[in-house]
Amino acid sequence: MDNLKFPLFITWSITSNCNLRCKHCFRDEYECNDLDKETIDQFTDLFINKKVNRIILTGGEPLKSENLFYIAEKLCGKIKLGIATNGTLLNEEIIERLTNYKIKDFQISLDGATEYYNDFIRGHGIYKKVIENIKLLKKHNCNITIAMTVNSFNYDDILNNSLNLLNELGLKKLRIEYYIPINKNKYFDSISLEKMTFLEEKLTKEKKDIKVQLPSFDNNIGCGAGIYNCVLNSDLTISPCDLLTHKYRSPKITNIDLFQKYWLEDENFIEWRQKMLCLSCDKKYKCLALEETIND
Image (cartoon, rainbow, N blue to C red; front, top):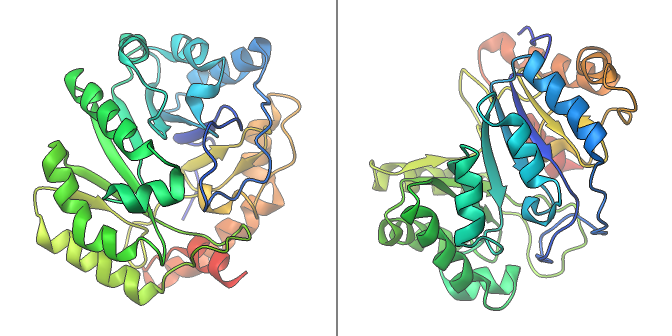
C-alpha cells in the first residue's frame, strides 16, 4: 500500500472558531486563530502546484473564518472545493458568493433527523434554521450531503427517521459518522459496532436511491487516510484523518516545505501507514482509526 508523495485529497480546517457548542464536540477552546494571508498564499500555491484534486474547507465553523472567501478566490477554478459546515450562518448572499467561486458541494451537519434530537445536541432553534438554509442551497442547485454523528442518544432517531428526512428535502446523500468519546460528555455514549453495522444494513438496504456513507469497517479499498487523504488542522499540523486529529499530529508546519516532509517522514504518519499495511495483507480494511479511538 504505497502512499502518494503528496496527498490527493485534503480536509483543511481553516479556523478553530465556531458559533455552536455541540454536546459531543471534542474542543475545549474555541479561540480564533485564523491565518494571515501570506501563510494562506503559501499553502494555496503549494496545493495548486502539487495538483491536489479536492479540498474540503471546514473548521471549527468555516463561515466564521475571515479568510473563507479569500481562500475560495485563490483556489477557484484550480482545485475542486467543498465546504463542511453546521449550516447556521448561510444566507442568500453568502451562498451566491460561494457558488460564484464554483463551490457547489456542501456537507451540512445535523445530529438528529427530527428537531428534538438535533437541538438537544446542537442548540435550541438550530434544526429549523438549518432546514431553511438547506432549502436555500437547493434553490441554488448545490450538491448537499447531510452528515449525522450517531450516538446512544440519537441512534433510534437516525435509524428510523433519517431517510424520511432526506426524502422530504429531496436529498440523496447521507453521511453517518461515529461519535468518538474524546470529551467528557455526560449526556450520551458511543454505540457498539454491532449497532453501527445494523444501522448500515438498514439504511443501505431500505432506500436504494439514497447514497449512505458510513465508516468502512470491512472492504477492499479503504478510506485512504494517510495514503492519499490528509487533514490540515487549524494549528498547522497535519493528521491522517479527522478521527485521528487528537492522536496523530505532525509538528507544526512553520515552513511550507515541511508539509511534504511531514507527510512523507513524520513518525506518526509512518506508524499509521505501517498499521494500514498490516491490515492490507489479507486484502481487508477496517476503520483502524475508529477502533483505536474507541479503545483509547
